[in-house]
Image 1: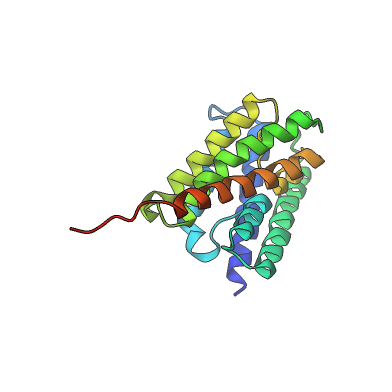
Image 2: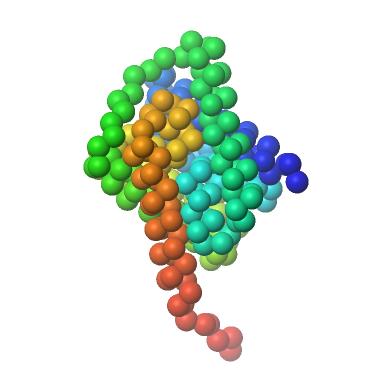
Length: 203
């Protein structure tokens, strides 16, 4: 029972720490790519245990389409935030520093919302079983990369994750609400599309 919470805690901690280290260091691979790879690997490694949300916005989106119950959703969000805070504490103890600009304008919220719509749409395709498990990590990781790219090009920090936003000190109301709204929209939209798909007749 507790294993899924440990998986969410450790996964969110790792994802947040990877983002922090990427922001602080000079590395030939960009932060969005590292985040996408990290998430994809966790989908493959612990997806069967917790579903690999690693993101309060994803959890709330899945709650909206009834793919998780409210009790589990609350517990998931708690351990996700705790994991991100743990990553922040680790980075502070290690003396890791970096500069990040945090704004709370409406445009930031819109950027995070739009980016999250694309990300959560990809997640929903896996959740509804329309993607083969063998490529689920690639689809979800790729969707994260696309969502981050879109949000960043629109002017935000491209976080798309309220827990990670706390962990990397990019915390504002828009980095909380934007991803949540986007996740619900993206998943409900996919639910609407797939509910009307044609039935394939076997010959």
